[in-house]
Image 1 (cartoon, one colour):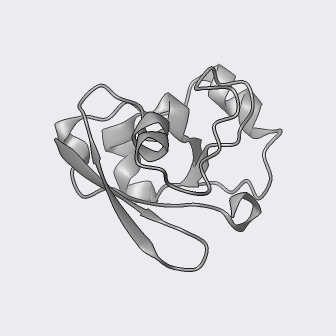
Image 2 (cartoon, rainbow, N blue to C red; image 1 turned 45 degrees about the vertical axis):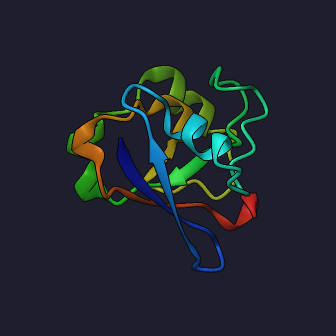
Length: 106
């Protein structure tokens, strides 16, 4: 299992155990994490699972696809480090990954 750290807008750390192949969104929702609403259930159709990912992790995560980039245009508080957690599949290389949940999702 891989541990992923979610930091909510108030600065609280939520360490979540994720199964390899599971999306970050699914790991958050399965652990009852507030701020990752995932209204579309992971279909990349709502942008309510946005997270901010430090750029040093992007080589491990890979670049966002065209659909993810397009959906991010509908999200609030989009930054250059924004990703949709439903589009990030957990790998063992992500152990210790820390992502931030934007204020708009708190």
